[in-house]
Amino acid sequence: MKKTVWLSFDIALGGDYESLYAWLDEQGAKECGEGLATIEFEFDHDSNF
Image (tube, rainbow, N blue to C red):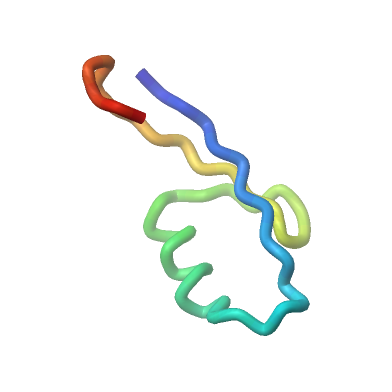
């Protein structure tokens, strides 16, 4: 089963965006505009998501 998660973040707050973008890349996230991305997670039906 797959779930899509939308992630919204405010780039004006001065966070650790280098690490955030590295994590998003590792997850195969797709950029959907400034400060917005989608990530698809695949998991077993029995897991708690």
